[in-house]
Length: 151
Image (cartoon, rainbow, N blue to C red; front, top):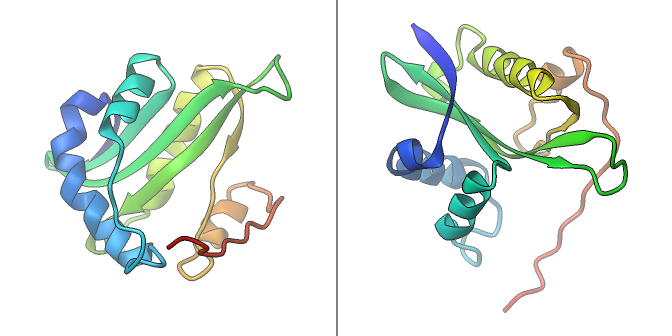
């Protein structure tokens, strides 16, 4: 049975590492130029500041998915807290049974309880999950373009 929970970085960091790499290998563009190299010190600082929230999906204790959010007071709308997504991933073999949907709903409920007004999630165009978001009331409000200009 898959369970969903909020966990601290210090508890899940080592378990996250292989899953993050699996996720990166599946979705990241420019992998030959931009290597996965998380800034764990900054993540720890944000976790200690209460900004970082890590939500996990576990199957019999095994980490099978995550949704990482940053919850901040909005700089544009100071009366509101916004939750912005960092990464979301569910192992492909664990997606049956609406695992992604249930993880998203768990995070929504958590954020509501924390006084969040607006949640923002980004999707990859080449690996979309737009149907999950739009069927759950999310609006497409922006498009984001990237261009590799590094060395």
